Image (cartoon, rainbow, N blue to C red; front, side, top):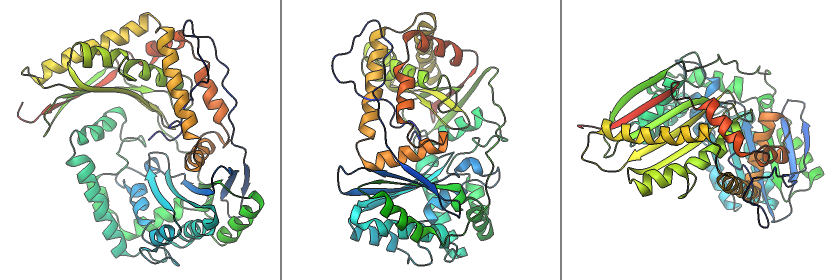
Length: 452
């Protein structure tokens, strides 16, 4: 998911002028908060929302797969699994049992930049979530044995088999990342890690990773929902005060990356239909060009009236589906267009070349002529609608506030995030297409059905 912009711009109230696009003033949206830091270094962000009697506890450890090193990959995701297996005062299985008994739910996820855990439950049961999160933050290693590591290692390896190695087109995603980034870059390896690294991981490796990256000073907790700020602060101080501090971690340093030519590669897979993926390096999250490429992706494939969808799916019926997206991340992003061909008697290479030529035609049109004001307005309306929808529930707001804090230091960055979209004009989208989507510097990755 998009860590910072999976809720990225809202639905306008009233009738919008469609031509030309006037610079719009973004509605003032805000999530007031109180933020403080415990003596052990844990950052805590509290947001009151009394809409419904629910609360979400959202924890970000600022350690995703980018904190790993080549040859020892997959640790961040492995820990996502280990953290649900119990801690000093929580028996195996009781994490879910206690939450379900209180009427709550929970989950976790790992990206290149962070690992996230959350619990959403009735506000009256807030102490349950705080107890569970504080116990595994402070006392997980008390129960992490070699046998537990081996068990969860096998679970992760099976997940890799299911989601990548035996999934249609699954290994193309792994290969694309390797083509975009050199081995010296923290984004080179997949978040789930390499099988040989998971096999080689020792119990001591795991303990070292937890001690270094799962310290309070490398974490932030957002508690959003039907709470009283002063009372909740006392609860947090009670539950987390005995968690020992850890070392402060410096920012990740990543070498610059640049494509200087077209990089072509063809894979074969046990699939029925050929697939083409085009990928470019693009600006990092919240940097100039990031929002423009979100809108550009919408103009190309955002809905049945979008340029590539209409032309390739409806008019020419060359593709089964097509999508474009700006995959934003902290150390640099990538813009992708993914097209899966329809069944054809023609050779896969010929089919994909035909699709690629039409994609290039539409990109060139955007580079020479700005999109219509109506196209941009439709994209902004959809982005804005998603933004507001994401703020309707405490779980969405809590995760977004943690994302904003991680990226900017300001948990209430909602208005600023929205404003960067609302200020866009058609010529901004044209400029982004020219700057970031050159035809002579990109990845062209094809997947052909085995035997064809």
